[in-house]
Image 1 (cartoon, one colour):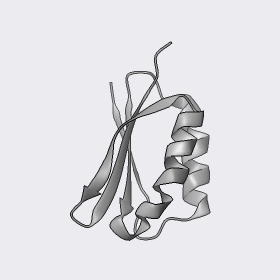
Image 2 (cartoon, one colour):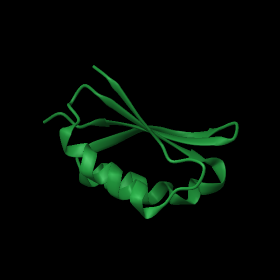
Image 3 (cartoon, one colour):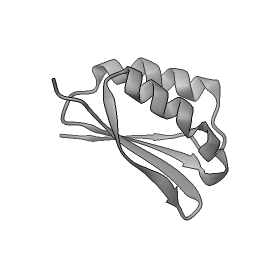
Amino acid sequence: MSDIFYDFRPEMSNSHLDQLERSLPGIKGNDYVTVILEKEDAHEADSIMRILSQNGFRIQSKGALATEFAITAKRLMH
């Protein structure tokens, strides 16, 4: 089991979303994925959660942490 972190700070861009989408197929079922954004970019969370969901991940938690916004997800096991 691994924890995979994506840090999309200081400013999230479309290339960050592309990077996330390209990397998800190689992530195993026991691995957790955490995406960190600036709290000001929390409005971008829907795009990230949509990509995770479309790639077979279930959101475990999301929310603000001090100056950050974090999303944690795990692959759904079939």
